[in-house]
Amino acid sequence: MPVTSQQLIQWKQQGRIIAALTAWDYAIAQLIDAAGVDLILVGDSMAVVLGYETTLPITLEEMLFHAKAVRRGVKRALVVVDLPFLTYQESITQAMHSAGRILKETGAQAVKLEGGYPAMVETIARLVQAGIPVMGHVGLTPQSVHQLGLRQQGKTEEQAERILNEAIALEQAGVFSIVLEHIPADLARQITEKLSIPTIGIGAGSYCDGQVLVTSDVLGLSAKQPPFAKTYTNLRETITQAVQNYAVEVRERKFP
Ligand code: KIV
Ligand code: NA
Picture 1 (cartoon, rainbow, N blue to C red):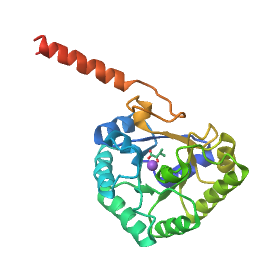
Picture 2 (picture 1 turned 60 degrees about the horizontal axis):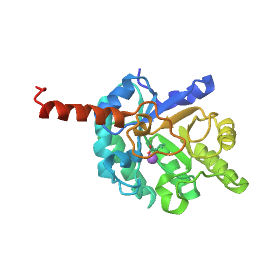
Picture 3 (picture 1 turned 180 degrees about the horizontal axis):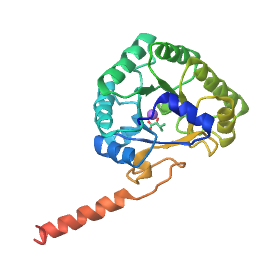
Picture 4 (picture 1 turned 90 degrees about the horizontal axis):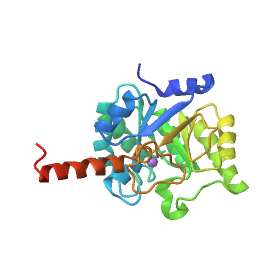
């Protein structure tokens, strides 16, 4: 049975932990879905595999193209798609249009938007009222890299209180889940205890209701990765070895 956004809320009540990963194409999506992750995020972090330095340049058209490919590969996991930078911040109308295109054209079940400031909370409330499941994202929000850098957020008491209040406001606006990125574990625990919707941590300690990582980091495909990522295999090494072996065999007429 496919996972639904409402089910994830029930899992929190039951204490069932959510395992999430990102995907950017059909092959990766099919593999990680069949391997049993619960939520697949078509994150704008796919900037990495597209060769961009930050998530800012990604367009809605690029997200749509990749989200369609991912969706074709997924049978069970809930598919959530990031709205890219400046395709939802301008106005509620713009956000509705962008989120609508994601749901209508890709078959994904939900969208994710960064930020918990008042105007974003209002935008998210309107999307939810229109029937669009929304995931929130607070703490380090990479689309604000030129303001925040990629530093841990919520280290001062004032910052921590702001992030907690943003998470509460997002829950009230109707998000079904919130990503907590790169914040102290203690703050993530506080937020997780306060909310009835599941928190999905990345670099946010071990007290969240679920975890997400960028799949290219998990697989060792990324040239550089954040300090909180964990690499479970080294595909860069595997691929380099395979390609070198192939080239040698071709040149020495060992293959075919
Ligand atoms: O784009 C992404 O991969 C994300 C996750 C890090 C949560 O937003
Ligand atoms: Na993202």
